[in-house]
Structures are given as C-alpha cells and as structure tokens.
Amino acid sequence: MSGSIINIKTEIDRLFKIEKEKTELYSYFTKHKDQQDDALLDLNRFDTNEKKFTYLRTFLKSNDFSSMKRDIAHIVKEELNHEIKKVRRILEESISSLSYSTLSDIGDLAQRCSKISFPLKLTASSKALEKFGAINNKLIIKDTHASPSLGTQKSDFIFIQKGSTVDLFNVVVVGKIKLRVGGRFNNTHIGQAISFGEKILQLQPKREFVYVVLTDCIIIEIFIVYRIDSAINSEIFTRYTYNHINSEYLAFAKEGENKGWKYLLVKCIGMGRTSVVYEGTFNEESVAVKMAKKAEYFSCLECERNALQELSDLKSPHIPKIILHNENTLVMTPLGVKIHNLQKEDINDIIKILESTHSLNYVHRDLRKYNFICDESGKIVVIDWGYCIKTDTDYDSSFAGALKCMPDEVLSSIIKKKKIFYSPKVDLVCLVRSFYLMLHRPSLTGVPFNKNDYDDISIQAQYILNFWKDCEKSDIWRNIYSAIDDLDYNRLIQELEKLF
Image 1 (tube, rainbow, N blue to C red):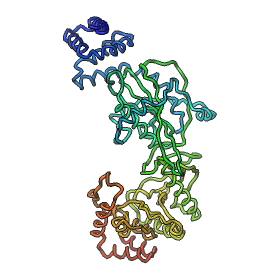
Image 2 (image 1 turned 90 degrees about the vertical axis):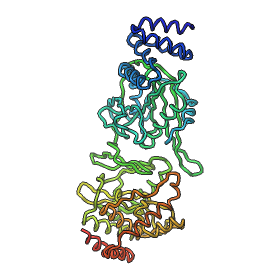
Image 3 (image 1 turned 180 degrees about the vertical axis):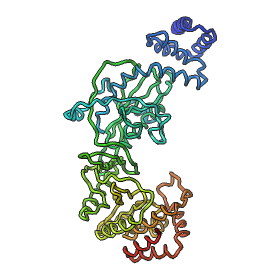
Image 4 (image 1 turned 45 degrees about the vertical axis):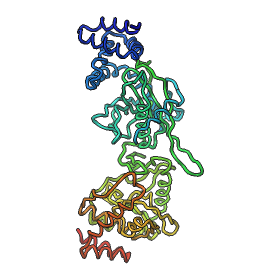
C-alpha cells in the first residue's frame, strides 16, 4: 500500500466512527489508486476536521449519483458561502466593464489560450468613468436552476448586481459546477461553460467580455471570454477569444473596495434575430435602446437610422425618433408597450403613416404584430425599420419580414425561387394579414420547420400560401384586397373599419 493510502487511512480512522463507512472508503481508495495523490492533496487543504470529514464523505457510494450530489451540495453550503468571496470580490470589478450546441474543441481552444493572473484589474476606461463618483455595486450569487437565466441553456449559478432581477441583462459572471476527472476538468465541461459566456455576449451587445467560472467547489478555474469585431475585405464579423486563469483552490482573498458606474440601460425588454432592445433612461426620460447582437448586423441599424432620420421630416408621432446613435446602437423614443390587438383608430393612423412613407418611396417590408407598439398617450407607433427599402434606389430582392404575413406574390416568388419585387402593396397586405391573425387567432402551428432547411423556406411558403387561399373568402375581404390593388388608402381604411 502506498504512502498516500496509508496517510488517507490514518485520517479515515481518526475522523470516521462508523465501521461501514470506513470499510467503504478503504475499498474505494484501494480500487482507485489513481485518485490517491489528488485526494490527499485536497484533504490537506482543509483546516478543520469537519471540512475533512465532509470532503471524504463525497467518496462514499460514489456510484450513487444522488448521494454524491447531496454531498456536493453540503460542501457548497458549508464552503462556498465564505470561500467563494475570493472569486466574488475579484469578479465584482467586472461590473465596471463596458459592455449552441456545445463543442469540446471550444474547451480545448480555451485550455490553450493565454494565461493571466489574479487580481483582475479594472479596465482603463472604467477608471476614467469613476469621475462620476464611487458607486458601490456589490455582486451576489444566484442559483439558476429554479429560474433559468439563459433561455434554453441553463448554467448552475450566475453573478448579478445586488438588488437587480435575475435576467439576461444583469448577468456579469456565469458559472458551472462539474466533477473533475483525473484531477482536471475535461474539454467538454470547459466547452459547455465557455458556450454560456459566448451566449451572454450575444445577448448583451454592450458588454465586451464576460467571466466564466468552472468549479467542483474545491478547485476553481476562471475564463474570460472576449468579443472582437473584425473586418476582412470590407466584411464585418464577430469572433471570440479567451484568457485563462490558473486553477486555484477556493480560499478567502484580501479585502478590497469595488467601484463602477450607473448604466443608461434599465432592463432587457425584447430580443430579435439581429438585435436586443433595452429600456433605458436619458435626461430622465424613458427611451428604447436597440443594440446589434453581432457586427454582421450593423448594416440593419444603419438602414434603420437612415430611414428614421429621413422620415423625421414627416414629424409624425407614429414613427420613432432617434435621440443618439453609433454604429451598433440606436437610442429612440418613445419607449412604448407591446399590443395584442389593433383598435379602430389605429387602423386610420397606421394606413395614413404608410401612405406618407410610401410617398417618400419607403417600404417597411416587416409589418406584423410585434412591430406595432403603443406609446404612453395611447398612440400607435410603427417600429423596426431595419429591413425597409427605398423603391427608387434599392434593388435588393432578398426576402425579409414575417413569412406568415406576406402577400401571395412574395410567397410565390419564394416557392419558385424567383426575384422578389417589393412595392407599397406589400406593406398593405402585411398589415391586413397581421390584423386578420390578431382578429381571428388561427392556429399556424402546422407550419413545417426543420432547422437544417432554414435557408430553403419554399416548403414553409407553400404552406402559408395554401393557408391564405382558404381564408378571406367573404365579400368584405375581397373589397379590402380590391382597395389594396388600387392603392386606395382611404377606401382601405373604410373597409377595415367595417370589421369593428
């Protein structure tokens, strides 16, 4: 028997009173000689008999996963509360930073990345912002099993600002608890943890990097995931890089004060394919802050910015106004709330504003329920102009918008893989069909969808085309489409108002 097992046996004899537990531990370390040195090293790190006893009990009935899980939970309760303070106090500084399926090669890449050391310092930009005063933004740890914080992906715990809600916007650090194999975390575990960090950066476009913690409640490893927007041959794309802090045992670190600054942003209120929308404040006024998820989507914000700046000449309360902007952000008013149905007065307001925008050669292309909001005075507002085009200058025939609201001509072009021609009629049909879906609430759950066929939407387009052929057969709907064909905005208002 090796020296390691003799020392462990001595500790087992000293700490355990129940013979059955002693026997199980003797047997375990005899069968698992490869774990003796690691176990002895870990055991010597604990400074009390109670901690050593708790640690050794994790090896009892190791094949019983539920028993192991309970023992690990006990360690978390006893150890994590105070020993995680080292990590917490260091990572609190990240609040001052601006802001898939798991692949094991992500973990391998992260293992081979540059290594950095404690302590993690504030960035130079955050220090400059401290002129606004020291703001003590403490971080707290939240268990996310009862309240998933990453949608379909669920981490084990997160760090968020104290007093804030557990949602995507507030996550500063994401953590995963895994058992080590052979004294280390494998690439799959690292890859899973890293993927959470990349997901956070996608959902928080303002954040430049995020911390990822991987631990078994004895050893802790920390990765920093950076977002880097790059351009090659005039094409902008987003990639991720990693830095890695050497494995350390959980231990209390020295005291330190933590500072940061208050955000313009308040909370996340919506997510789309290309952007995230937040509620914010500017000059004590509520605003909508729209940020591109990735550099590839900057062009959508540029398109929306250009359109809204030109449409501002209409001085309409039904079109958003830009307050501030840069290449990846739009700050707009009004903030508004989502709607579930259109009111009679909304019909007149929407069609009149479409008539005005069409006169300037703009076609929205994405009129649907989710792109109508109501401001605090009750006025309807048409939002999300990122896919709009100018019919006199833009010749982009690619598809954009909600498939289920598209007119038959667009659906047929998609099915036949022909060029799509956008005209003001597209907006009017999208409005009418969105209104129909809100009014009758038909089930469209039968729309076939296979993520592997996402680029080829002809099957879905055929299903939608068949759906609309079976609907809208009454005289009133025929009159509505007749008004659209004639581009008679006033008659369209009159026909739609008959439905109220």
